[in-house]
Length: 491
Image (cartoon, rainbow, N blue to C red; front, side, top):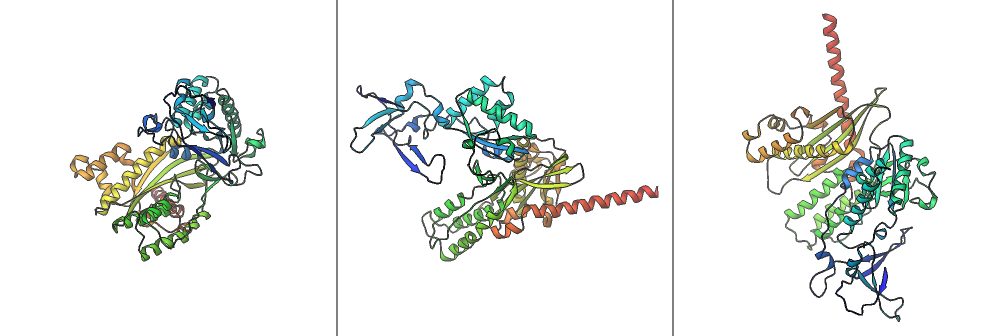
């Protein structure tokens, strides 16, 4: 920023600012916050007249999902990214601040020369500059340019490679490419120590060891032993309002739906508050509060859940995606697993993601809810396949509703409007031949449709149910092989 003299009383915008101090932050414990949404005497603020520019980066769900496909993974962020991007000189009068060194010092006026946190256009401007940089340098660094365009969310990079050599080369190229634009990468984290050997310890995300838990786009990642985990701490209260309950639910950050059944139960509880017609600031009735506090007491159980970040297996010969949907009168959901078969015949199944929705307040039939769950699964699978970008041998979609399967084999125009619209959409997203029937007892999406407490989920996860399901499939295949062998022997 630079000091200016406001002698000509030029029309301008002064951004209010204050600081936030967080001693737990080792690199930047003190952060300055600019409020460009503060209205002036005209009734307008800077943000109210700026265009946000839209989003030109991949969504967070896609980035985090793709991050789980890399055997050798790393993360880093650009140091003070906004401060490296200059604003057009003629526009800087809209980014003025007032400041004085001490209480007795005179007030000075400064103009901010760079893109500023708190302005609505800042994210777009930053990403647009990075896009221009990758367009200019993609001839020299084609793979790094692709990663910046695909695996970057604001100033954070989450990426990796299938081999250690490729990962090290990509890491070096990313640093070189970004330096050409005046950007420096720091806070490096990796699941393999070799990717940190050429980096000074001052550029690590933490100094002592890479075995700690670090945040990766909001997720908690343990680089060693390469797991995704959770940390939830919510205190019981003697009184709560509907607004406070919603705030507590919002803290359960889980973009992939790994603890989807637990969050589903919280959503179902929130909907019950609407049914009781409670206002936002009304205190919960005693019995209702007790139910919620019981849920909160068990909630820290999710802290014991650790799932592998890497969803593939070594020496894979076959990769399949299996999605399941289910519904109840209270909620419906969809979950997707990846099934890998190795050269030795070992089968490994891992949770990829899940989604859940509460059922509409207006009563409807269970088959229609099952159809809504099937549509949710079809959309989720349609989203996940290009994100994973893997050589898939098979995609299967499973439901325990024979009515839904019958609808999906009909022409949409033969059905009623509600069913017709959803069947048409499902048929446009996936092939009818991909749909299968699964017994309700073996459907892992069942817990999404009902919700469970964290303590129960800890011991009866979707993964356990899907393993039991595959044991059933394997036994059926063995029976078919035995039958075929007998028929061949007879002939």
